[in-house]
Length: 230
Image (cartoon, rainbow, N blue to C red):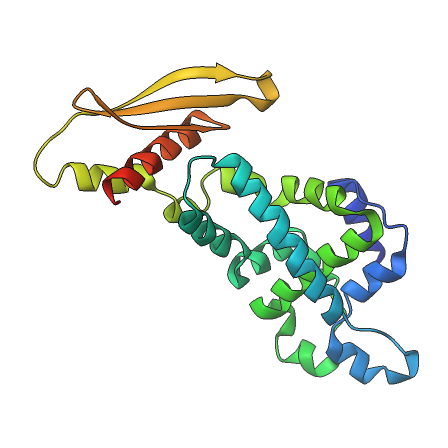
C-alpha cells in the first residue's frame, strides 16, 4: 500500500483505515487489475458505485440543512454542480489522490492520472471504502474538511446567486431600494444561525436563514424570488 497516501490521510484528515485492503481497492484502477491478473486484485468500480450514493446522500442532507428556504429545484441544481465530474476530480487532486492511484502502463502513458473522469471515479471509490470501513459520520467529517467549506465560501455561488437575480427582476421597471435586514442571531458561536428579511421600497418581500449572514441574505432573496416567480 502507498505509504504516502496512508500518511496523508492520517495527518491531513485524521483517517486511519481499519481494513487497509479496502483502501487499496479504492485506489486500484481496472487497467492495473487487467495487467496483474496473477495477483487476483479487485478494481474500484464497485466502491465507486457505493461512494456515489453516499456522496449524494450527505451532500443532499448538508444542502437541505444549510439552505432551509431554497426550493427543491435550486437545491438539485446546486447539488449537481458540487458532485459533477470536474468538481470531484478537482477535490481528488487537492487531496493528492491522483498521486496514489494504481494504473496500468497503458492508462498511465495515455495521461489517465490527469483524466477528470478517472479522478472523479477515484474520489467516489474512496468515499465508498471509507463508508464501509468507518461509517457515514466519518465520511461526513471528511466532506466537512474537503467540500462543505468551499460551498459555504461561495465556490458554487454562480449556481445560487439569488440576490443578483432578484435585483435584476426588481429593477427592470426602474430604480428601487432593496434592503437586507438581519433580524436574529441564535446558537453558539461555532454554529450560528442568522435570520434575514429583504425589503423592496420598505415592503417586506422575503425571509431566510443560514449559517452565515451572506447565506441568510441569499435565502431571503430566494424566498422573494419564489413568490415573484409563482
